[in-house]
Image (cartoon, rainbow, N blue to C red):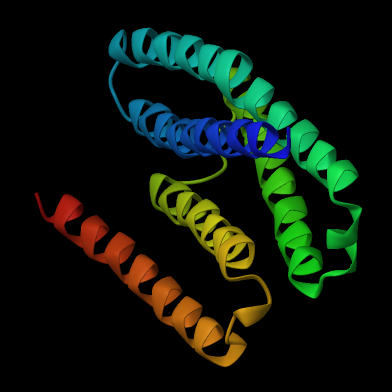
Amino acid sequence: MYQYILAIHIIFVVCWMAGLFYIVRLFIYHTEAQDKPEPDRTILSKQFEIMERRLWNVITIPSMYIVVAAGITMLFLVPGWLQQPWLHIKLGFVILLIIYHFICQHKIKQMQKGVFKWTSTQLRLWNELATLLLFVIVMCAVVKDNINWPYTIIGLIIFVFVMISAVKIYKYYRTKK
């Protein structure tokens, strides 16, 4: 039984993360559409709102709930894991990912009202935060107590630096055109 629940958990983590990654890409395109002349701006905004709503309500929200339900079910099946330090760290980052999820949901509502507070560059950086959270969660789940925290933290710092640099380099080449 446990292995089936684990498989469901992993499958819907993939679906949830796909939804989170893609919704922020849609935010970027939706934000950039605001620089277009009319009627393009209105047409694109309406289309992005439809895409955002469908992605969010059909894939992302249900996937998150299934992930959480499967995770709780696994803890009921193996309650001893609640004594493991790696699980506490993982669950802390899962909570951060859930907060990230609800911030994205708030952004959807803002954009539907025509409020665009973040630039496309800020949204690109925001998208990388989900990658970072996913990285730590998977490392905790796979490596468990064998994780070498000094090297992991150094790796994460390098990862963050590379991601920020990539976004900045992309922005430079985009604005150069």
